[in-house]
Image (cartoon, rainbow, N blue to C red; front, top):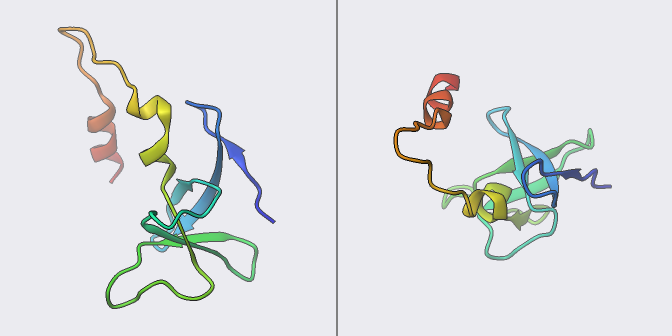
Length: 97
């Protein structure tokens, strides 16, 4: 059973998954054949995700989903910052890596 959460920016339903690297990734809850993320539920009821490749294509138990960051209306409609204001988001992303 999917336990859905709400996006803090757009309030739409999302499904949190755990990537192969152990990081969290929000995906759209419904499968989409145009997606680029393979999602499945493991035996411990943890939703997992990975990027299918030519060496390891989509398996029968996986479904393609789109990452929520690609479809979030709040992200795609971000306003430009005023002149003289610097966004620290990119700096913070680099710092977390």
